[in-house]
Amino acid sequence: MFHKTILLSFILVLSNGLFAQNTSDAKAVEIAGQVMKAMGGQKNWDKTRFVAWTFFDRRRLWWDKHEGLVRIESFADSTTYLVNVVSGTGSVKRKGVVMEHPDSIAKYVNRGKSIWINDSYWLVMPFKLTDPGVTLRHLGAEKLEDGKTADVLQLTFENVGDTPENRYKVYVDQSSRLVVQWDYFAKASDAEPRISNTWDNYKRYGKVLLSGERGKRGKLADIAVWKKMPKEVFTSFEAVPAGFQK
Image (cartoon, rainbow, N blue to C red; front, side, top):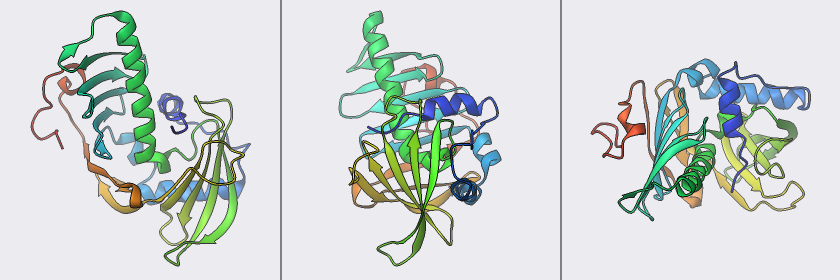
């Protein structure tokens, strides 16, 4: 559904998080840096290791950023995914049965990775503005419905991800320098966005800010950040230990 650069950027962040700025305009890059600083800064984001959230009441995710491990509990189809998003390996338990056939495992592990790519972009997109392959353009300033003025950044993508034809407009509040709205275009040539919603109610988790409110669309609930987490969360289908469930 959404542009899938986050896996590539995750891997490159482990190699210093380099961003090729030559295709982006200087003003847009400057604003992206201000967003990162307002969110807590690159160093604090890099040090943030364990993150969990519930994606619009559909599923719960736990993410070990440093190791690239993800646990996803999908409520609607009673499926638990334990995935290494770097190696593309993992295991899946569906409706009480652990999958054993290699083709089925590969299919559902890939699905789990795609879920993580999508769901994490909804949560941490402001940290990904300078991902490799992203081109930023400053489109000027616009007044929003609440009367505040925001700088508008356009994100397009080049030779990265599964859906490089996507485009975003990201609205950065001129006072707080936080992302307050995004517009998602399935194709860069589309005149109207497929999805447009606000980013509200930023709160501090550890040493970074995250937003869970997405306007009329709903919320990413029970956001949590930890410094440590039992390894069994990502290796065992047993219930997540108390204290790490929400």
